[in-house]
Length: 248
View 1 (cartoon, rainbow, N blue to C red):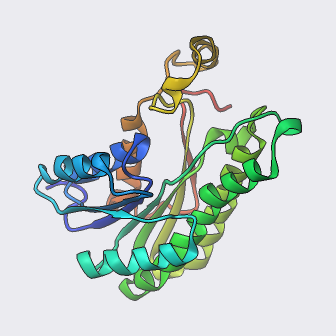
View 2: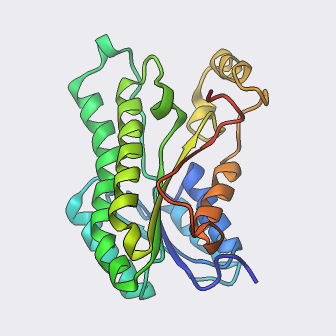
């Protein structure tokens, strides 16, 4: 038996990077999967087909996670299509890196809106369904930068630190109804986004990691599967790093 058999999951920002790996990992482990991204494009269509090969139902939705109304509509559409949502993974996120003295108000607002407000939007929209079901697992994607900060990423660090406080508060509010909420804090994970970084930057980051290598999206996806499963049903309000030891 696969550990997510019978569950339905919704992953935001699911068409690319870490989100894509989470969609595949959930499908491999028996979950029916809905995922959202800004556009229903070729990448989303390809992922639908790839996930469906595991014998599960998979459907992509075009939705802006940073929009309160879009998020409410998304939960309604997913519930209509799948009848329930057992797992919500708040994975949507962006970076707009710059030294603070050069950071614009737009840089700040965009990152807070897309990274942090999106988690509020989706969690607010799904909570009534999970309360009715008397159970659920909410998994928020934070970052080691949210734990320790990083020069040039004040906006990103603030959004990911905010995600941690949000996670712990939701865990306390909804725990009595068997709804769990945890955060994952990835370190340096090799994705399409990090592939654009200069080689010397990647080398510098790698040297700070005790395991001396960047992580893979699958490393984050594997932990997400565990937190979505009944194997973690006594774990809530926690922040778990996936960073090769770089967070001290």
